[in-house]
Length: 625
Image (cartoon, rainbow, N blue to C red; front, side, top):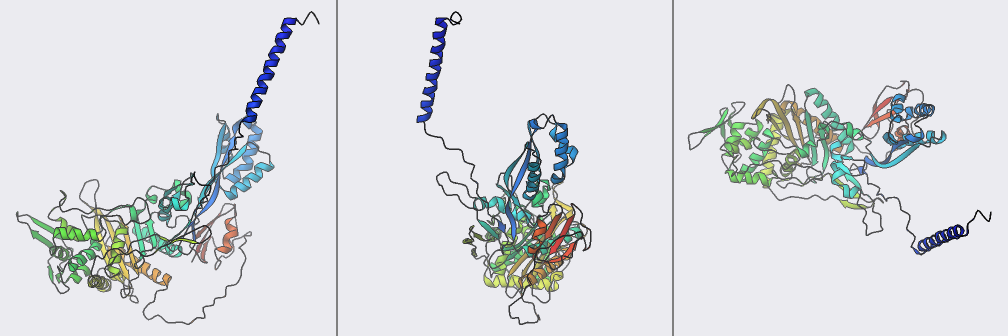
C-alpha cells in the first residue's frame, strides 16, 4: 500500500478535494445571502360577465372547456395499452377507436386527442383515466362560453374565441365590460360585469320562427328584422338570417356570421319615399291638397335638351302626396322632389342620419352612402332617383332610427342594444336612458307622414299588413338590386321591404323587415306586408298592448304555481308539455342525450313524441313559450 500511494499524487489529490469543498462552501454562501425568489403564481384570470336578455334570461354564460392531451412517449410501444385506452375513452369523446389509435401512432411526443370538451365530459373522462391509472393523459383547462339558445340572436350576441377575447357582436364590442383587463399597478382583481341586452328572448324566438318560415316559403337568400321601442330606442328584436349556431361557430358558414342590419348597405327602394315626402312637406314645398298627375312616367327636360325619365308601374292619374305614398307612385314622388333644391334635399337626408353610423354597440357598422351634389357621380337624375330610394345606400338600423322621428313627433331617438349593466353582486352599474337627437321634422310633418302610412295600410300597397283592431302605419318597398357582375340593375334580384309604426294614435313600436332575393313573387306589398302584420300581432300580444274591442277582465293579481321537482328520464320519453325550463335542468347535465331547448317559459311541443324509447345519443327538441 505504501508503495502504491505516491506522496506527490496524494497531496495533489487532497488539494483538489479541498478546492472543490471550498468552492462548494462559497457557492452555498452566495445562495444563502441572496433573496428568495417568489414562486411563480398561476396567471390570474377575470371571470367573464354573462350576457342576458332584458329580463335576465341567459344568452351567453361563462363555463370551462378542456383540451385532452396524451404524452405519446409513455404509450408509444405498448399496443395493448393503446388498444385498451382507445376502447375506454372512445365512447366518452365520441370518437372512433381507429381514429384514436391513428392519433396515438405519431412521431410527435405530445398530441391533443380532442379539444374543447365540456365540463360534464371532462368529469366523466377524468374518472376513467384516474381509475385506470392512465397517467399519460393530461387536461388543459381553458375559459369558455356556453350559448344555451344556440343561434338565437347570434349576430347580436357574438362569439368568444379560445383566448377569452370576443370575436364578434356584443362579445367583441363590450369586451372591456365583460372582462376588464387586469392592471399591473393594482392588486385588485376586476370582475366582469353582466350585460342585459334590450332584446326580449321570448319575443326574439317567436319572431325568428316567423322569419324562418318566410325564408323557406320565399326561398330568399337572406332576411332582416328590427323591432325597436320608438320612445326609448331600445331594440326589442334583432334578426339576421341566415344565422350561426354559436356553440358550433367555427363550423358555420361565412354568410351566417354577417350582421346584416348593421354591416350591409343597400338601396332601400320605395320605403324611403316616406322620408322624401316628409322632407319636402317640412320645407313647405308641398301641402296635403296639392295634386300631381301620374301618366306612368316621370319626365323632366334639361336645358341642354336631354330628359330624365323614370317609369311608374301604373297610370295613377291625379294624386295628392298621400296618394303618392298610398300607391307608391314613382311619377308623383319625382314631381315632389322637384319642389326642393338638390342641396336642401341632401342636407335634410343627412339630418335624418343617413350617411352616418347610428353608433349602436356593435362592431363593423356601415355608414351607408349619400351622394354629394358636387360629386362627379351626381347627375340630373340623382335627386328624383334618390327620392324613390335608389342611388342611395342605407343600413336597416339607419332606416329604423330615422323612422323613430316620425313616431316621436319629429324627434329621432338613438338606438341601443343595452338595457342595463350590473356588477357581479347584482348592483346596477349602468342603466339606459333615452337619448333624443336633434329635431328633424316639425310635429305636424311627422303626424302627416304617419297619417299617410295609416292610409297605405288601410287601402294602399300595405293593406296586407292591416291589423284592423290596432291602427298601424306602413310603407312597402321593392328595389332592384345592383348587378355586380354586368353593372346596372338586375332583372331577377330584388330587395323587398316594409316599414311599420304602431299604434298610430300613440306610436310605441317601429318594425322593419327586409327580404332579399326572394324567388317568384318579389313585391314588398305582397310578400313582406303580410309578415309585418303577423310580426306586429305577435309584438302587440307579447307586450300586452291594448287592442280595439278587447274585453276587460279583473284579476286579483295572485297566481298560485304548484311546486315541482326536476324531470327524470326513464326508458321512454315522457310528456314534457307544461314543464318549465327550471324543471329541465337535470336533463341538461346528462351526457347520453342531447337536449335542444327553443324559447323560454313552459314546454308547448316536443320531438320525439311521448313514449318513444330513449336511446344513447338521441336528440330531444323542446319548444317553450
